[in-house]
Length: 353
Image (tube, rainbow, N blue to C red; front, top):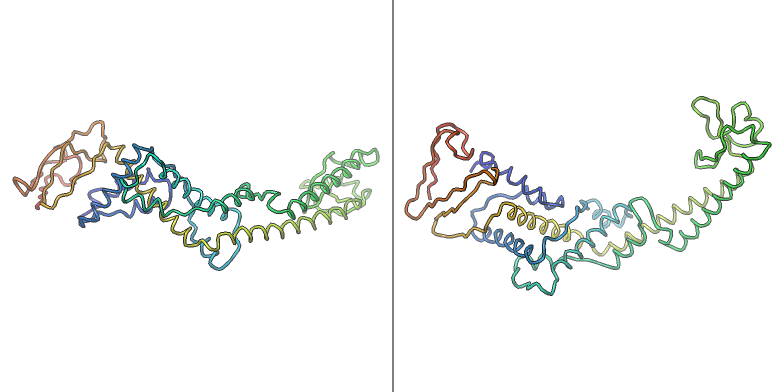
């Protein structure tokens, strides 16, 4: 069977448009026809269950999940993870819980969903971990002050010291003595130290350390001697902050150490469910029905439509094969309304059963 000539890949591409996760898209693109009746029935049943469930309880909400292959390897070797990676892992647990909540409704009879029930029931979630991550990590770049008492204390000292430095420098640049020496009445930062912009020809009148010169050379950024020690203290606090952040990230990472298998399986289950419900969504968009599989080598199509054609314009076709006759000959030029399935102008296609 030449799937490329049948444009089967285009069908799969249409299916991926209903997938939300990279894993669901992978499963959709890997889909191949099967001649194993049990496998075919199982695939059809999972789609039908998802369609029926969507009528009972709408479609579940999916979000994109990260490929956590690298994160799992780091967890196995007890390496610390970044803020972004930790949030990605927590998101998998959160999405798993949301999917479990979607399925665990009192009005649903789970016995009606023999294929979907095991998939939903095997999802793992951990509220303690997700709550801890969400309370500590505000976004992909920010750790909350309250992630630890030590971090809170360090940042309070930082903010107070920064305010003291700015206040002292502001008093300086607005004083009558320094006003004529300053290029602009602002306090800025160069090389992680607070400085003031001094006119180039006045640089010798301000005692301090030069950290930068403007492109035009007219402005010298000087750290006055009076704030030198305060800047040192501030940088020391920043180093303490980084060390504390490393400790926090290591502690948060350790929460996931026992759950590598659960995370990997969750990714698979989320992708599988995303793929199944994408099939259901695709099916509903085509107003498709579940075919009945028989072992009599018979095909009975009623008002069949090609999914690649405009569904508002395509003319449905019905035919039977295998009961009264076992060979069907389709012939004619491309302009003969063969729905574009056959590429050669005068070709005979014989389907024998």
